[in-house]
View 1: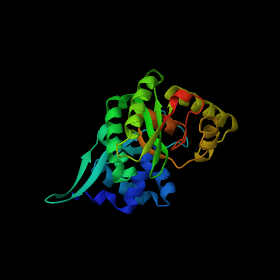
View 2: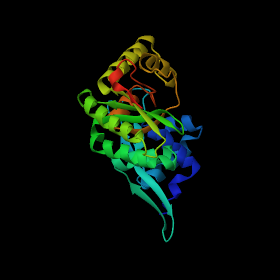
View 3: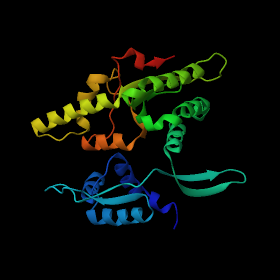
View 4: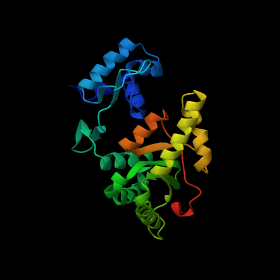
Length: 261
């Protein structure tokens, strides 16, 4: 099969939606303004390519989908061109490769030495990181967010501080300044539960419009541009339960959780 076939605009829009959370064909049709019949046909093709998987929901409730689709596992479609290299290939990614590719694709190539060292520090500890992304970035500064287990907070702070020191070292030739913000998974879970409880009391489903309720508690930037670089299955599950796609959060009340040059 042609490895580029699943990446037409129509199919890619489905993959983008499924990267946020598992969805049923009906939900995908609503999100993409497409017929359910067309969505089902596209999903069968994506499933044949191994890009998505189908599962039946347990404890079926009235009004809830019986079947949902999700991204099968992290993959990358690589198109490499050089001398004498020219190939296109769909490859499976581990957490380490996924993190590195997202860093490379999110920043200018001149910053890769700093980003490579950051990835090298974090890779052995990815199992302790539930969520990794950046709150804001420009040509000279990047502010990262990490959602981590409470017991691994201190270790990861030290590792990130090493990256900060290296990036800011005189004569290093690097112009990208790094800062890191931490929030524990336990704290985020507690806040999410409170938000869910409030939603249950009011009878209103949570959505992206509820972000400010969470942001105002723990984010000093207000509502910055935010991009997810890496999220564990536990984090995606938590967000899916709360029907929130991409939290924009920070931890301003813990000075030791923020290391900045």
